[in-house]
Image (cartoon, rainbow, N blue to C red; front, side, top):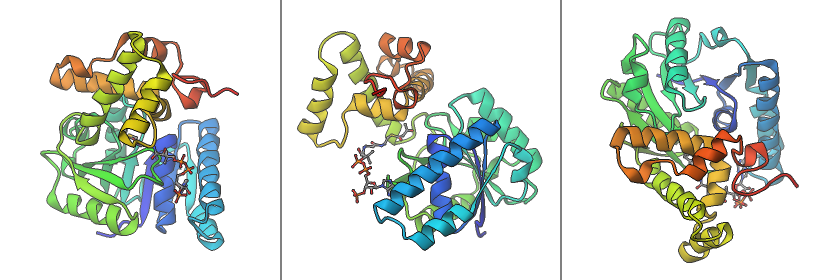
Length: 286
Ligand code: CAA
């Protein structure tokens, strides 16, 4: 099955990044956000990132203009009715995801439409059962920043059909230019299963007063060659997302290493979510 029309539910950091990839690949893309203000935010995010790609010569002017022309925005989920692939990229709330997949199942008319979730941690089978077509539901997990990071995790649930897995794997590799890996349907999949305990431990080290943020980040950048330290990376991903993922993983495995440390919980409660709010572990306001 050819994927030509792609719907994005959510135009935040990840949704916009995935929309950028699909628009660049020549797909018609429809980005759905919840309000006119949120649509405007998604559009600004996409135009900003395309502008950066243009200025860094990652795309030429004709490619830039064609990709922007492929982008459509809406606040109405019903506008996703004719999509071949819908990627959900909203916050890590199981209830919200259930609601969205149930609605998409009712709205999307093509029998072989693929419903994908960009969830960072929620098992795909638990989302798939909100639809009457669980064989069409798959995990498609991109990494932040999506236009730049090479990897995509393809997560088949116990209910996903082999043809859906083949279709999305081929689409990710051949159209989006990504390196797909097949990841298991368990909380955190491959990458977050390894990454999130590391990020959470870094926040624990800071919160318990054992080291400064600069020393923790420099330690991992200079000692291990990481492009960013764990605390700067947590701010980039969003502390709310890290918290949601840690909670989901703790729920799944019941191991202390995944439990969100008090500092992370307090910062999320206080609305200090990282770069997107101007303040997280670091201050981005100036
Ligand atoms: N399209 C194409 N290329 C783009 C682009 C766009 N829209 N925007 C930027 N780029 C390119 C730049 O041109 C640059 O390319 P070159 O190296 O060839 O010049 C490259 O991307 C890096 O961009 P910047 O120069 O703006 O930024 P940087 O050098 O400071 O790197 C970074 C920023 C890519 C974020 C880097 O610090 C990095 O790799 N950090 C680690 C990110 C990471 O670990 N992400 C995974 C998070 S985990 C996750 O997402 C999963 C989850 O579920 C929580």
